[in-house]
Length: 165
Image 1 (cartoon, rainbow, N blue to C red):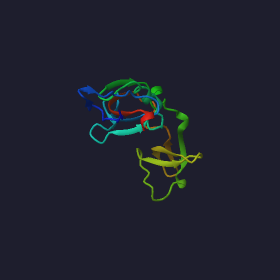
Image 2 (tube, helix red, strand yellow):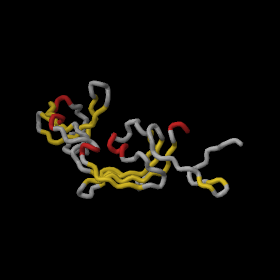
Image 3 (cartoon, one colour):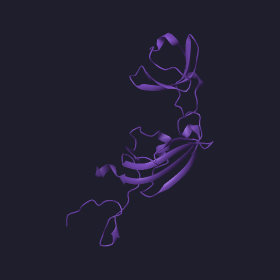
Image 4 (cartoon, rainbow, N blue to C red):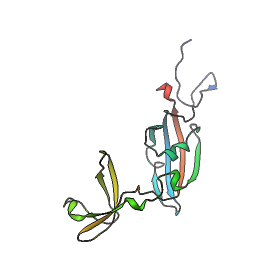
């Protein structure tokens, strides 16, 4: 008898199809939100399209991925995360004063603006403008959520195991 993969929730002769758990290398579709302790929502997909990614591909930081293992479609979870479990502690060594002359003339330098910088390894790093004067610009190269305790809410929509892709 040939086998076929059925969508989650579809059954055969009244028997439900197995819902796979989140595991290494699987593709996961989910809704998530990251909320600061004061209630400010830093990021959310709940009112938008869900996020689809492969576990371990770097889309989510490691600590957020760890919270997903074992969850199945339909599962929800809420976790309070310390900075070390999410985007790390704020590192004062990543705050730099740079010469204003090193910035293109057409770039808007306003405190709070996020600017992309090219790292020596070829990656792009986001920096937040903290302050500026006539000669220097103070830029924070920490992740904007570094040092923050976060509430992580997640709802798993679909899981496709690595061996079924």
